[in-house]
Amino acid sequence: MTVEERVISIIATTLGVDREKVTLESSLMDDLGADSLDTMEVIIALEEEFEIEISDEEVMAGDTIGEAITGNKNATKQGLVVVKDIIEFIKKKIG
Image 1: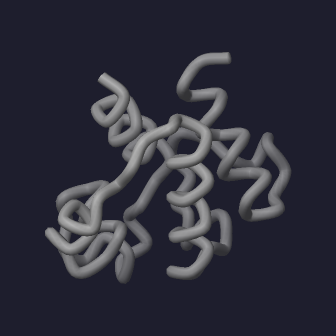
Image 2 (image 1 turned 90 degrees about the vertical axis):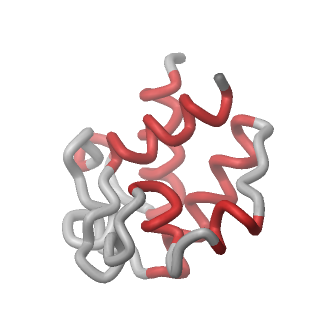
Image 3 (image 1 turned 135 degrees about the vertical axis):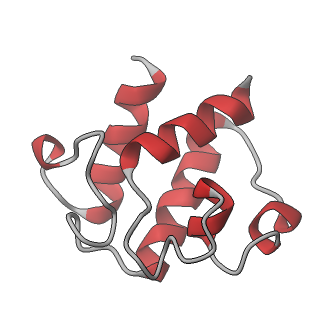
C-alpha cells in the first residue's frame, strides 16, 4: 500500500466514512464532517500507522493541528485541512 492509500484508509476508518468519499481534495471538516477532536484522532492514528511522532512543538507552532499541517493559521477554522495536505505532511515526516 502506498502512503496515499494508507492515509486515505486511516481517515476513512477513523471518521467512519466510506473510503470512496475520501479524495485528495476532501476537506476533513467540510466534506467529511470531522471536528477538531476527530482531526486529532486522525493524527494519532497516523502517528501509530507510520511510527512517527508529531511533537508538541510542531502542534504548538500553530494554534491548531490544521496550521501544523498546512502552515495556515486559520486552516482548521476555514475547513482547509484536506487529504492531500495530510499526505504531504506525512511524507515529509517519514522522509
